[in-house]
Length: 70
Image 1 (cartoon, rainbow, N blue to C red):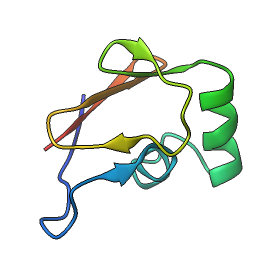
Image 2 (image 1 turned 90 degrees about the vertical axis):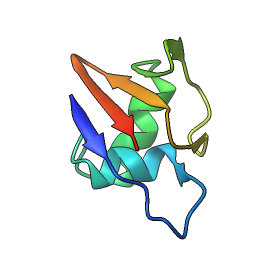
Image 3 (image 1 turned 180 degrees about the vertical axis):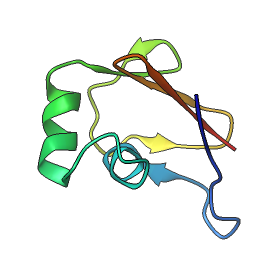
């Protein structure tokens, strides 16, 4: 499990940006492809919006890893 602390000045982070900053992918293009391929789940549901707003308390799953946003 990866704990990601959201900057206190921000209400959210976009899904593809979260995937990049947590090193789940090497580039924005790769992040977009992972979302397009249906590999990324947000709170247990497949997420198809590349720029979905990820907020505190959300859980993002990719492959066998979980990112918890704090």
